Length: 230
Image (cartoon, rainbow, N blue to C red):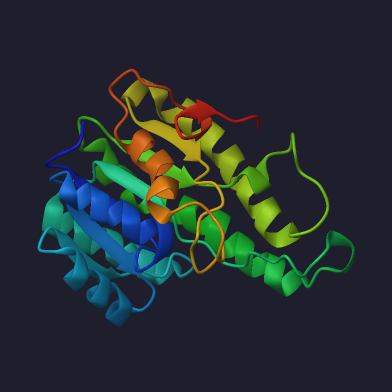
């Protein structure tokens, strides 16, 4: 499926998002690399080559999302792949019993509602594609099957993102839009910290879901192409 597509990657100036953008561009896709800070997006895009364009997008700001969707519509007319990667607050310092709910609210606004907001805004452009794919970059931290104490803002926001994946997949199935959650695993990024798997390995799950063929799985939760428990 790769090659010649219009691919939007949010929060892509660093880490998993940047690596996904790099590999999509290498495969021949046109990449819309977004970041809250336009300067950081432009720096990353310059480093990744001519197939990567820089765009300002704050997924937590409805006005920013609406403006971005309008600009992408004019520039490209469709979106073939949407990678909802932007995320904040890996709050290992918190527990649910004493959480700062301001931090929780901020995490929900970006990690869950941000992905939801961008998907809704770009849905007309996704519907204009013959092979639309939505990839929600989640985490095993959001799996109810293995969830335990700690990191409440991040874990709850990712569990919510997984729920959104299931609902969107069911509602868009007849239109051929495949929607999946993926876990990159613990990767050596600014958020993940040192010691994780290489970023290129973490990006593998995202690229697998972006490249699914027509009739491929939808409404699933995967790591490295293998199902994860919800």
